[in-house]
Image 1 (tube, rainbow, N blue to C red):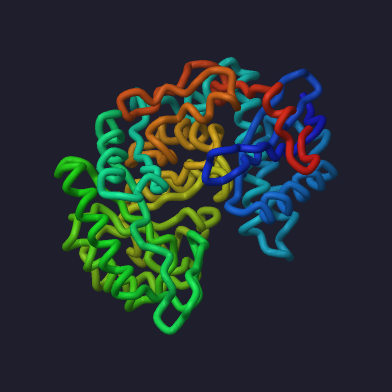
Image 2: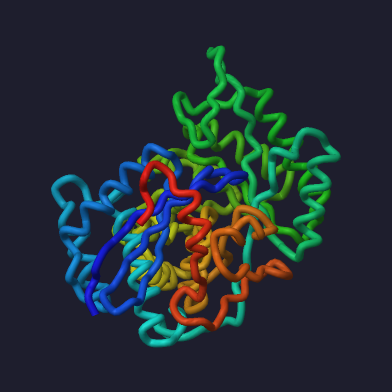
Length: 390
C-alpha cells in the first residue's frame, strides 16, 4: 500500500465556536482512506497550515502508510530549521491521525486495539456550558442544570469578562487575548459571582474547571485564582499565564491552592519535560490534533504516568479531534477526562455518518475499524471553504 494523496479539507461549521473544521484526508492506492483533523483556533492559521498540507505531498506520496513512526519523524525533521513545533506539529498531527485510521481499517480493528487494548469500557468527559446563554441568572441556571441532567460530572468555563484592562478604554474581544495581563476589580467580582452561582446550581459533586486561557500576568493570575477558590471551590485553574514562560507558571503554582492544568498549546513530548521535571502542573491537557497526533499523545501520556500526573486531552473542536483523543485514552491508565465543547454532541452529526454516543456523560467508542467513524462526503463537498477540499 502506498500514499497516493494528502488533502486538506476546510469545511464550514456553522453554529460552532470555531466556525469551520479542518480535516485531513490521506488517500492510498488500495482504496483505503484515512481521516485526521487539525482545526486551529483562527481562520488565518487554518489556511496557512492547509497550504503546508498540500506541500507535504511532495514529501510523502509513495510512502507506505503503515510506517507511521518513520513518517512522523520525516515530517518533523523536514522543518527543523524553521522550527519543528507549532504549525509543523499541526501538520504532523492531522496526518498521523489519518495514518492510524488507515492502519486500523487495514487490520480490521479499532485504533485502541492497536495501541495495546482498552483499560476501560468508556471515556469520561467534561464539557463546556454555552456561555452565550449566560445573559441572566436564570439562563446560567438552565444551562448548568442541563449539563448535570445529561449525566456529566464535570464542566469547564472561562468566567472572566472581556472588560477593558485598567488604564485602557477598549475591551479585548479575543478569548485568549493577552496584552498587559490585567483584570479589573469589576471583572474579578463578575467572575466570582458567576463561579459561585455555577457551584451552587451544580452542587458539591460536580467538578468545576476554570479556563484562564493564558490571559493574565503573574500577580493577576494569583489574585484571580485565590478569589475563585473562595467563590466556588474550583477543581482546577487552567493556563493561568501565557505558555511561553515556565518560571511565570511556577510563581503562580507556588501561591495558589487550586490544581493547575496546562498543555493545550504545548507541542510534543519535549515541551512537556520541564512541566514534569519542575512539578509545574497537576494535570496536563495536550491536544491530539496539535501536539503530534495519536503517536505523540500516547508517548506524552506514558511520560505523565511515570510522574503520576493525570492526562485530560484538550479535544473540543471537530468529531475526529474528540474520537482520536478518546482512542488513545482508552489505553491510558492515568486518564482523567476528554474535553468536549458541549454536553450535546449532535452538532457533529452532519459531518459523520453515525452519531457519537455520549449518553450518560461518557463517550462509547464504536468497535468499527480505525477511528470507527466515516465522514459524510456529501456534506463536506457541499460546505468546502476557499477551495480546500480534496
